[in-house]
Length: 257
Image 1 (cartoon, rainbow, N blue to C red):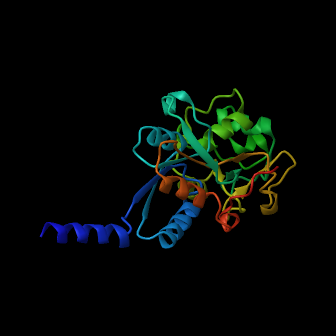
Image 2 (cartoon, rainbow, N blue to C red; image 1 turned 30 degrees about the vertical axis):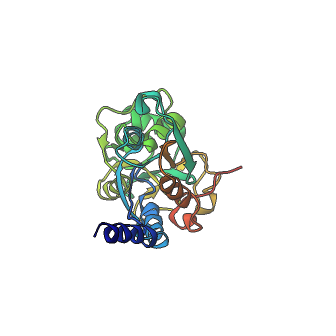
Image 3 (spheres, rainbow, N blue to C red; image 1 turned 180 degrees about the vertical axis):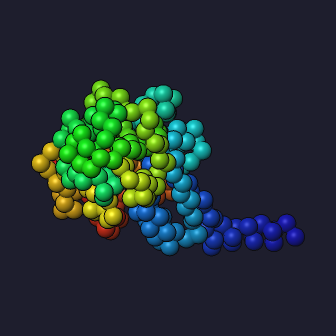
């Protein structure tokens, strides 16, 4: 009886591939692309499964460093306070333009960098102060864990602090919906296409067009991070996510050389 059981186990190992459940968490700006790529990975390498969740860039780095997920997606580079010094491998998925948007009724189509800083710091409280309609400015931002927020701070706001009255919106999609629905709102989204039903702000004299995605100066770079000690399947998933030919259709541009 023992040899029959042993033979059965050997045959099972030889002919059946064990199922692996892989987990990915972090930045939300590329979630639509990741859902498509994860589904294709499951079809290409059955019976593996991939679970996705958001939480923001810093959360992705924290979770992968603690071993709670296999891959963390982050728009910002790791820092020791998030990774606790854990050695991580990485692959960039591409770059996604960071766009300044506002409610379509604000009456303004372009903003200087100085005006963006004044709006986001709360110094300007009415759109009339910058040539728009007499509506109060409603500043919308993302959580501190958001890589998009950190890029906004570094590239546009500089040392100017965010308004203490800013409304925190949890995800990229939620930001777009909130700005569409809130009179006087200003916000920012990660998008490789011109978003609809909002006012897309030119920065200075430069207006974003979809074909400018690879060179637009304000962008996030979603990157897959995983522990160097991870299995070959984790590395394979990261490489799969970083190389799909349809990334451009989801607003992920190749990084400018």
